[in-house]
Length: 175
Image: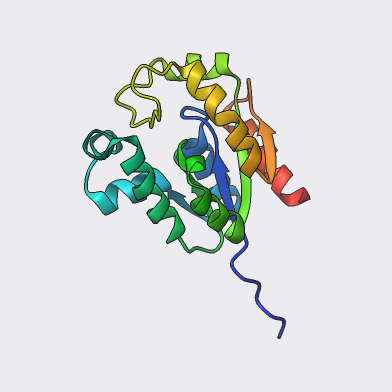
């Protein structure tokens, strides 16, 4: 019997709000026959509140602490994990996720995000520097963090969900 490896077979998706992490994650999980976990839903279920209500009650820093705790306690195998866009603010959480899987940055251009999102408000988006942050500000603040933590970056600009999922699965199988 060969030794089983330490649950490093997870696929962890990071990227901006509206990049399609959850939608893409579900499709990729089906293709790979993996489980799927939406970290935002884990947080909401643990707190019994929507993300926006948690942010309103605890502030951005408080929310990041909650998110960090939930992500640090995640253990899974053969799972695609769609993180919240703010997961990269938690170094401890990102190190844990990197230790249990491959972290993939779902890269989408600012123009594409604008088309997909409309506004950020009421989406449960953590804005460290207050509600006045624009999508462009958020993009500029987070992009270096996504690049820092990513094992692999996949650009899905202009791709539909099926094509993006196929590109991601092919990328994973080449690693």
